[in-house]
Amino acid sequence: MGNHRRDHAERRRRGVSRGVVATVVVLLLLAAAVVGWFAVRDRSAEEAEQAARACVEGEATLAVTADPDVADVLRTLGESWTAGGPVVRDHCITTAVTAAPTAVAAEALAATTYDPSAAGPEPALWVPSDTAAAAAVAARGTDITPRSVVTSPVVLAAAPTVADGLAAAGSRWTDLPALASSADPLRLALPTGPATAATLVAVATDPGTETQPLTVDRATSPAAVSAVSRLALAARDVPADIADVDAALDTIVRAPDPTAAPVRAVPVTEQQLAMRIREGQQLAAFRPAGPTPMADHPGLVLATADPTARAAAAEFLDYVRSAPGREAFLAAGFRVPGESTDTPDPIVGLDFPAVDPVAPVPTADARAAVLGTAAEPSRPASTTVLLDVSGSMESIDGGSTRLDNVRAALGQATGALSGDGRLGVWIYSRGLDGSRPYRVLAPLGPSAESARTGLDALSGITPQTATSTYASVLAAYRSAVENWSPDGPQSVLLVTDGPNDDTSISPSSFLQSLADAADPARPVRLDVVSLADASDIDTLRSAAGQTGGDVIVTASSDPGLAGTLERLTSAR
Image 1 (cartoon, rainbow, N blue to C red):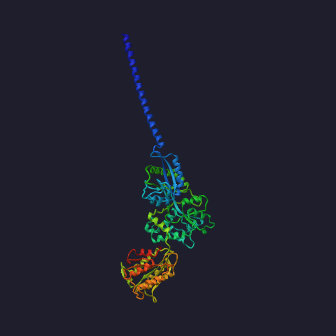
Image 2 (spheres, rainbow, N blue to C red):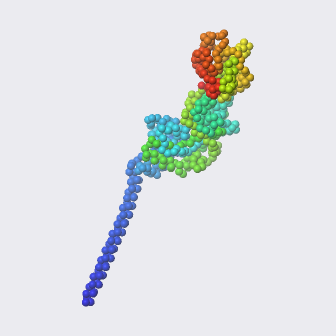
Image 3 (tube, one colour):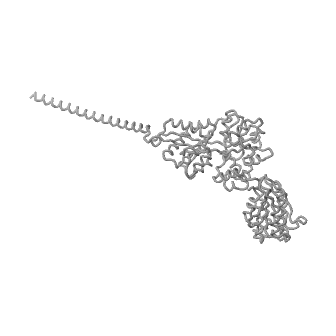
C-alpha cells in the first residue's frame, strides 16, 4: 500500500514537470516570434531607408535659370544642397544653375517652343531680376505663389562728389530727363538691363499717381513718351564703347575728374554697387526721391515642369531661404526679405537705408511700351498753332463758345508739353494786323514759355468777322519752314470751325502755293482739327495729305479735344 502511494506521487511530480517544461517551451517560442517580428520590421525599415538612399527611381536634375546677379550665389547654394543628398519622390536630386540675363530667359520662356540654345536647359525654377519680367511666363503658370528670394533697390551709381551734388538738389526720378538734357548734362548711361528698365519706368510715372502701378495709358501718354525720349536721346551722347554696366562703372572710376567724365552716372542695383565699393572703388549711391524701383528676384516654380522637378524646386527654395541661404546672400550684398528685411552691414561709402515706399510693379504692357519708346525715342516737336477766331467761333457748343472751349483745351494740352519742344501761337480772321488776316501771339519758341505768352494773349481775344483760312495757313507754313529745326518733327496745327471765305485765293491756288512752300529738306506737316463739317473740308484734307498730316473732325465741346491737341503738339 505504501509503495502504491509513493508511485502515484512520483507520477504526479513527473506530470507537473512535463507541464512546466511545455509552458516554458511555449513562452520561449512566443518570445522568439516577437523578437523575430521586430527584427523583420527593423530590417524592412532599414531596407526601405536603403532603397530611398539608393534612389529607386534613379537620378534627376533640378534645372535652375537665374539672372546673373544671383546666379553665383544660387550655384553655390545648389552645390551645398546637392551635397546633402536630397531625395525627392525617390529620386536623388542634382542641382544645375544656369546664368541667363532676365530679358533673354524671358524671351525663351515666352516662346511656343523652348529653345535651349538661347538660355540653357529648360528650367523648373526661374529666378529673374524682378517681378515685372515674370509676365513672360504667364502662359506657363507657376506651381506656387512667387515671392522674393532676395531684393536690391535700384540706385544711380556715381562718383561720390557727383552723388552728393544730386542728393543736395533733392532730385526725383522724374527729374532725370531735365538733368540729362540740361546745359550741364548728367551724362547718364542707359545700358540694356533690368536696372535701366526700372529707371525708365520710374521716369515715365506720373508724380501724382506714383504709388499706383504704371499703366499703358500713362506709359503711352505724350508726357511719358516725351520724358522717356528725352532721357534716351541724351544717353546717345554716351560713347558707344560704354555699352554695359561694368564699362560705365569703369569709366566713372577711372576718370581723373568725375564731373568731366563721359559718364557721370549709371543705373545699377544696390548689390552691384556694394560689390564694387567693397573692392575699394570710389563710387557712391544716389537715391532719387520718390518710390524706389526694386530688383525683387522672385522664385518662380514653373508649372510646365514635371512633378519631381517642381517638388525639388520647392524644396530647394526652402533651403535657399533658410539660414545658410540668408547668410550667403547678405554676404553678397543683397537684402533678404522676411518678417523684417535683413540688410548687409554698412560699408564705407554705402549704407543700406530702409526703402519706403517701394515702386509698384508696372503692368506688362506699360513696361513694354516704355522700353519701346526708349528703343525708338521721339524727338521734341516744333508746332505752330493757328487758331480760327472768326465770328462763327462765338457759337455756343456745350454751354460755352467754341473759342472758350478751345482756349480751355489748349491750356490743358500745352500744360503737358515737354520743356525741350517749341511752340508758336497764331490767330486769324481778317485784318488782325493791318492788312494781314493773322496775328502772332507768341513766336515759335520754348514750349512752356510760348504757351504761357500765347494763352495770356488769347484770353483777351473776342471772335472777329471773316475767315481767311488759306492766306493764314500759307503764312504760318512758310514761317515754319523758315524756322525749321533738325531736332524733331515740325508742324502747323490749324484749328478752325468754318470754310475759307476769302475769295482772293482759290482752293487750287492754295494747294499749289502750299506745295511750292514745302521744302523736302525741311519737312513741315500740316494737321487740321475741324470743329465743324466745313464745306471746304476736302481741300483741307488734300492740304494735310500732301504734307503728311492728319485731319480730325470733332466738336469743341468734346472732352477728348485736349488730348487730341496734346497729341498733335507733342513729339511723334
